[in-house]
Image (tube, rainbow, N blue to C red):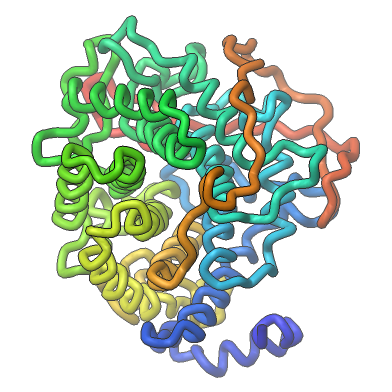
Length: 479
């Protein structure tokens, strides 16, 4: 790839000369696969400039951070977003065929698995949400489905890792409050545990539905059905297929917090599309997919361009998490078309218009990266950069642009159609109990660039932050 063959100092000068007017954006011709791949490559390169985990003495799989609270957008990232980013790079390889980041992705996804291979690493216990664990599990599931190179035989395998996450979370289904559902937080001693929200249950639904398709094991489909039915029963999904944020289990999940985030809609859309596939095109799942897509387009694509309505009107109010949500919105919409092809035309239309706008918005020159091509969040502003930059914005622009290759991309694999990832139906079930609150760690495993060999290193404390919940249904965003 030409970009990577240019020495870095010269590449920076070249980029400044090409994009220095901060109004050009990244060149993109959606009729040309080569142009789409080139744009995605440039954005991926800049996204990975934030990642240091493959360097000597750093921790593989972890972006710098975490910030003190989600409202701080210039002090690093939460653990879950690291997992999401590596999933986006699996997508990047799938769409472009570029293997540049494959070794780094594999290293990261394997280093963060935790002692029971279920993405519950001990040093993240103090901030672990079921959604956090779920994002890493979904990245492993993506690796299995897309045929990402399998790990060495002595390492945990992608499918087994996703099953490990599923097994742990299935054991945490709690009928004692709200007649079911998963709590937001993974452990009862964590602040926010009593909140039951859509993203935690959406991750579980999504993984269950995808495991059902991949393995043809009906038990996963049963779990997905149960989760959908529960979401409807507590009215987190309403009759118009709007997906709301959640509710307090201490008050029977009422009143429902009706804030809407794009990734909540999209995570259920992708899961529902898999259930449509699994049930061989059943009418009930057809209607659910169609309803979710209609609500998603209505709520998050005004004028055909993806828009994070909770905060984008005043982008300074977006949390560090919200800045990344459009990455998952667009990637899951694209992926859903492979499972429910009847939605392709509607999805393709907004992916096209959003990608064109996102490429223009990649026109920024923040002080730490004055290259004239850093991506903002506000795609509808075109080349008028909104002043924001970071991993989330890069990931979102990369996903929406490369998703325009979905039609020509290969069909996701299953165990019966060439999938090679090895599963373990009992994976991850070694951790079903609540651990003790983690005390500060005195040693931590670290790895050098490009290797998984652990070295004794200095102390690492996650300190993953959370937002305290207001007493009366105020929306919550957590890293």
